[in-house]
Length: 133
Image (cartoon, rainbow, N blue to C red):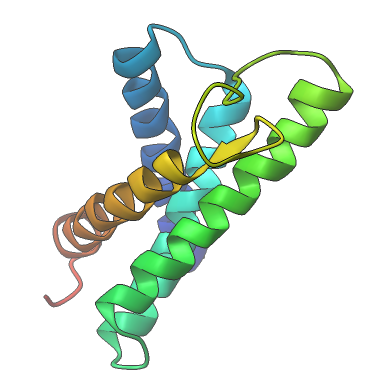
């Protein structure tokens, strides 16, 4: 039960933070991006647990997190933007984009934001769930 509470907590945190980041960056967000932010934070939490146990490096966590977020953005974009015509975002004008749904610039941003996700996860583990540092 405690594991589910941790996943729920980090998921809610990730969803809210991602929505806020989008609001600051673009002036609006979409509920689907909050869900992707929640899933991304859960993945970061799990990978960070592997790092904390010595089974993974910092760079490994950041790289896999970036790949997960970029893949999630591609999947969501293909379904929501292309198939359903929701037009939530469009990267067609960005260099090195794929189908207007993902681009190299944002993959690099996901890599950097994953670091802040790890720091936040460590804070949540330590100060909310009283895990050792």
